[in-house]
Image (spheres, rainbow, N blue to C red):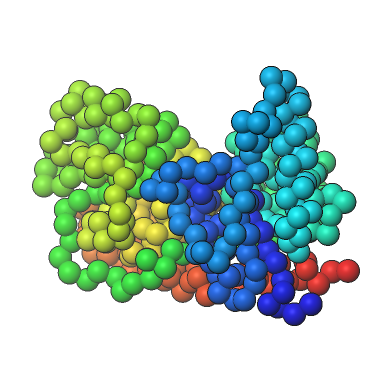
Amino acid sequence: MNQREKHIAFYIGSLHKGGAERVFVNLAEFFLGEGYRVTMVTQYQYPEEEEYGLPDAIRRVLSDLNPEELNNSRVFNFINRVRKLHRIWKQEQPDLVLSCIGKNNFMTVVTTMLTKTRPVVSVVGEAKEEYPGRLMRRLANLLFPHAAGIVLQTERSKYFFNKKVQRRAVILPNSLNPDFIRPRYEGERDRRIVAVGRLDANKNHEMMIRAFAAICDRYPEYTLTIYGEGELRTYLENLTRELGVSEAVSLPGVIPDVAVQIERAVLFLLTSYSEGVSNALIEALATGLPVIATDVPSGGTVELMTDGVDGLIIPAGDQQALEHAMDRLLGDPAYADRLGREAVKIQERLAPERVNRLWQEYFEGIMKRS
């Protein structure tokens, strides 16, 4: 079997715009460019403007049940979903399928049994959140060893799983979005502090706004801009009014060309309680911004940054530590600039051509096994 005959499939819930979805689309496009046949299998399909686009040469297959296949019984529907996904692998016959996110990994391992397709499971978020509770954890420890490959993103995440999974797991990073491969902005910086992320409780923008309100009297010329959309928009808008900073804090929503919007900022904040390896953090570092980020349980932040070298790392949920770090960088622009100049070096470490080759080498090794 030569390289042009090799067939790789990706299995994910949807292509709705998000971090894991973008990683899968980027990988799919890379393998297509390398001459592989590529199939994208998703459960759902959203309107075009809400999804990442795929090249015409990548076949898209939907695995969810259509209305005619649905039944009043949840058990019957689950069995039918398993059967349908199994039929897809039998019909498409990919040599390897990469899946991610929670139960999708379970489905991939189970439905590729008795087929020639080799399943590779990946955990892209905080493992404890993808597999909450004892039952989910037990299922992961039971099923993952039956996969042909197990991909994790951080060393710390290994310890969620049993020894059998730990021994088989490999750490593969996400590649940098090519839009962020660019020279660092060297002009005068806007006096803006920026953040990028969904407006939900986990991102903890409330702490960010409260910390900004606590120091803004010392830095009245600075503003805070939080890019993203989510269910906490109204709450956060009300909070800015309550704290008297509504004129200095803006929530513009989801915007295109994030790199262009943030590259002139003076500081980037990530205040999440938990993350896998944050794409927003990768992109801020690659832009050369001085960064303050929380030490998330997965170890995603410490995989990307070294405290005091290319950014500042603070405990999750610690508003006082955030205020101190912001005061330190805003009060010492030269130090902030040194951190930003170190941060931009991540462009080399996570360059797409380098990271994608690591994935290719791993997949090739799996496909060569007899």
